[in-house]
Image (cartoon, rainbow, N blue to C red; front, side):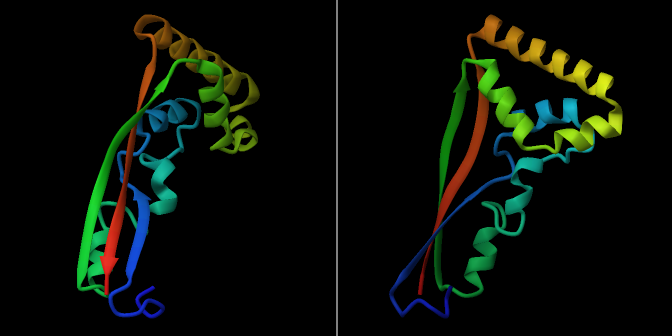
Length: 136
């Protein structure tokens, strides 16, 4: 990026931090014990809020980061569960633990999510996101 920008131009780069959606990672691990901690930000592990500044300062003399504190308020279990299932290879997980065991875990997770929403009115999910600004 530093090679394409001209002197004085600015790079804006958004990314996630290691705590992004950490609660959902825990829910997914109840279905797939092989799902890694911080699995949802694994795609960003090369450039996160925690390590992006160091990478950018190698090429840009002026770097700043703005962390965006936010969260999701999930009030319906169905869409959350469908989204979580889209993040794992359900067939491989079911093959690894057996169809019956996978269905048991899925039923247990559904009950847990429903109970939490019923008792608290929502499930809070951490969003750990931010924006780097780097100037040449």
